[in-house]
Image (cartoon, rainbow, N blue to C red):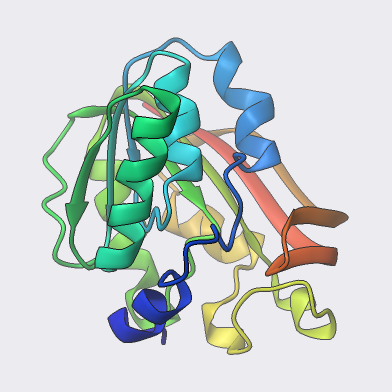
Length: 200
């Protein structure tokens, strides 16, 4: 599992290692949704949170990396938007019940020993009717060099995600191979899963 020190070291340089532009799946979906309060767990350098804030969402984000937060706040200032960003690990974050209109999990990979707990916390913090959007690497990603964990217990099968989010309605799901071009760490052929779900 990736530690705070791992992420602090990855984000330590001035360069935005995952770029300043948002994830493409998020970019394609978010403008079409009703604006509200959105949570970005494991948000790193802030590219997705800042994009959402620029669309008019009230943005909440967290990450365990202080270096990530510093760069996220700097990017928000550069784009003249405001985000609420806290330092927290994924199990320690206070997922207040029914507070968010949307949760976005963008390449947020958790070991299977905690994955279901984290995902159910994300569901808990959604208001009724709230949306959860997810993009992650599938186990087929192990054959590619375009990013993601090398531990198969941190990769996402659609069938496992359906179980984690069993109380939600599936509005879109797909397992696909695609070309990533989001940064040097997410570049090349990749095997990913995508979900959009709505809370009852």
